[in-house]
Amino acid sequence: MRLATGLLAMALLCGGLAAAGAATRIADDRGGRIGTYLDRFEELGQSGDTVIIDGLCASACTLVLGTVSRDRICVTPRARLGFHAAWDMGAHGRPVTNAEATRLLLAMYPAPIRRWIARHGGLRRQMIFLSGRDLDRLYRPCPLDRQARLTPPRNAAAGE
Image (cartoon, rainbow, N blue to C red):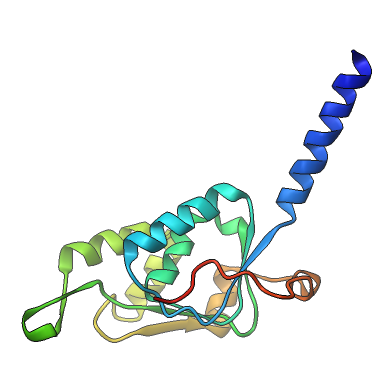
């Protein structure tokens, strides 16, 4: 009985370590429908995976910041986050800013991201980009060995 319990405990521990070592890479993601991204990232948030932002993560892709714990997100020197207001298709197929959806979107972001957005004019039609030193102040750099182990990369969300 003790041996079986010990083996079960060892299997659970090893399984947990393997899951904790998983990583999901986001790169060249231009975003898409908010609902689709929320579903994907809520699943990712529960997975325990580390999220490596290694390139463009724009529009709905940035919701990863509000659905995955900050301590499980790291950024590479290529990371670039793009934010803009939420919009709907208006008359004649033209985009129209949706103020209520924009407020909800902004509320999903962690406070440091909201402050950065406010300092850069808020969410509006034009994309604003967070990268370089500003981004490095908010998220930890990815360890080089984590980046090297991601061949081929797994994308958290393919652009739509």
